[in-house]
Amino acid sequence: GTEMDHRLKKGKFQRISRLLYLWSEWVQHIWNGIKTAKVNYCLGFVACLIVVIVIALLITIIENTPIVFLRLSELSNGEIDIEVEVASWSNSTCINHTMADEILRDRDPSFGYNAPRQQVDMLITPASKCNTPGLDPNDPRWKYPDLSQVCGNQYEFAGTLMLFDDDKEKRMNLGREWTLPR
Image 1 (tube, rainbow, N blue to C red):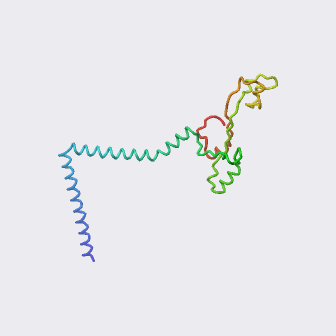
Image 2 (spheres, rainbow, N blue to C red):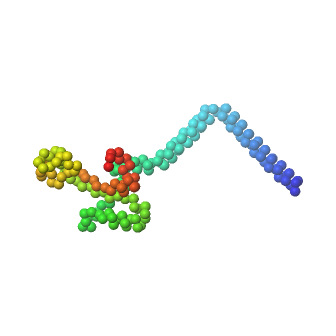
């Protein structure tokens, strides 16, 4: 048994020794080639370096492109992924969000990240611009019904009233860029 082990160890040592010899010959041959053709070596090295850098840059760009498009979308449309509207054939003017929310949650709990929003275009007259007797300009309400009829149209502004569920939007992190008080 020991003679067999000795031959196996000798054979492994010879193979490792041969591999190291071939590797050192290969390195010496490469080094001689570099010394005789320095310009060719430098051009080849720089070309390989540029290819590696360009490929690494392209991989980084491709991996981050969805984030860039998401950010551009958020800048132009806000942080809203989808907007659901009533179909014209439904003979309805609004969606029952409570029912829609229940249906979505029954299908998948992750669909529960939604929040209703109602947008109404209207004409606004600030109470402070109306000097009509009986109206208190310090009233905390920002709009009186039919105030334009009472005060006239001289201070009437077109505006959009946006109604939303602040708790649901906070829960799904919508409006994270909003810096003003809610």
